[in-house]
Amino acid sequence: MAVNDKTIAFLVGPEGIEQAELTGPWQAITEAGGTAKLISKDAGEVQAFNHLTPADTFQVDVTLDQADASQYDGLVLPGGVANGDQVRMFPEAVSLVKAFADAGKPIAVICHGGWVLVEAGVVDGRTLTSWPSLQTDYRNAGATWVDEEVVVDDGPFTLISSRKPDDIPAFNRELLAAFE
Image (cartoon, rainbow, N blue to C red):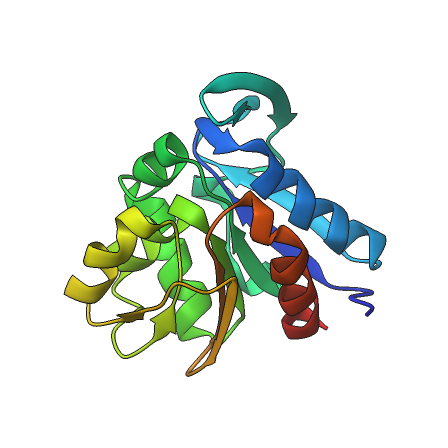
């Protein structure tokens, strides 16, 4: 699959990103000919983790106050408990996610990355998966939660979701198909 000439936004918080859920999809996008851009609240670096252990840092390409959904072809929301919790607390992040959804652009989310989808009010009537601890949040927001490796919901915008790092191969396959 090729995503040539496509630019995909990766939205993360300052720390707590599950590294595999950032680097796996990032690599899939770049190897398929796309451009990945890292968006976060502040300039500088963000801190990824391997579960609870600090891992690598990654350079932010675009700050939230400069991010515009119209400049991207799709959005990836990596997981990590602290990451997901932080991102949903940034009004600019919530607005950006809503802008992607309103524009009908594909959104791919894994693990705890979906808390911002709930905050943005874009999961009502949708079917998706996540880390199991988010299922009540999704259901309370009007979504149908299922425990599956990957779910693709073709509603007003394509929503690709997975549960955890073990699901990354299936997640990458479906996000590449959606971004193609």
